[in-house]
Amino acid sequence: MASTKDEVRTIPISEEIDAGLAPSEAMILAEAIGLSRTKQYMVATAVSELARNIVNYASKGQITLRVVRRGSQEGIEIVAEDNGPGIADVSQAMQDHFSTSGGLGLGLPGAKRLMDEFKIESKLGKGTKVTAIKWT
Amino acid sequence: MHVMGGCLVVPIQVELTDRLMSQIQRDILDNVARTGVKGIIVDVSGVNILDSFLGQKICDTARMASLLGAPTVVTGIKPAIAASLIDLGFQLKGVEIALSVEEGFRKLQRLLTPEEVEESGEEAPKEEDVEETEEGYGQYEGRGKDNPDL
Image 1 (cartoon, each protein chain N blue to C red):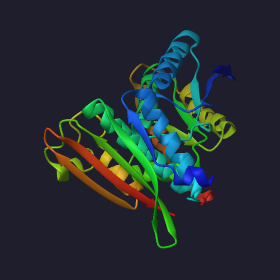
Image 2: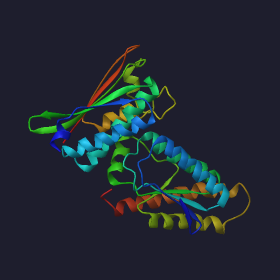
Image 3: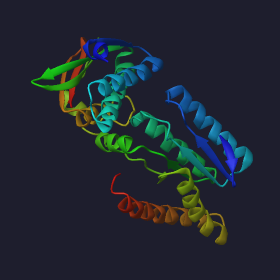
Image 4: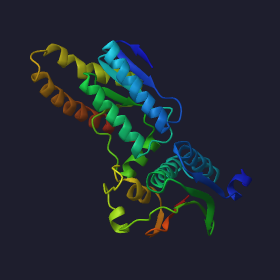
């Protein structure tokens, strides 16, 4: 399991099948660092939502999973990035039920609630990068 | 999926993909239209990741099936998934929930029994349907209290 924890995994996201792989990988890593069962599912669900956003808005991108440390505490970091159109109004995109793709509009705000730390950087025409951490 | 006691039982024991979920939706609606089952139980006890999109697909399927006259009960949602759905802000609207397939059968029986007794007219049963759904929801809240672990 030590090798699992030290690994940085980058998963390309481009279609449905990849979107399904990333949450499973996140779940395995979350279990390896000893996140509670509930937190494992939360991380996997957040990854799933972020992967969907990449597919829906940018067609493709990537999700990187790695173990981060804060003192003796470990956590799992998700970085979801794409070179898509970017988000015009980030604060609007962070509101529940706001969506420009006809979805439920729960992806970003939901992922934020599922994780402990959440940061979003977006530039119009350049892309979007979401960094989120769940601590043990 | 198989028919048991007049109900369609749909056990999902693999990780759901969008494609699979669309397939399941088609199969359920086909089956309901063909066999005229009275209710549907979708058991998701084998599902680990239920995000807002897949949850919505399940709700959509339930709503479509209810237009064909068959209410849906979703069973086997893991406590950890329930916690994730709450954080997501997602509500399983239009579906009944039960802990297990057995509980799901009982719930369907309760939903179906009054309907059979009060079969009159075309519009009236529809209104009854709505009331039954609300009744069912109340029962669900009651069950939640019995299971504080959820």
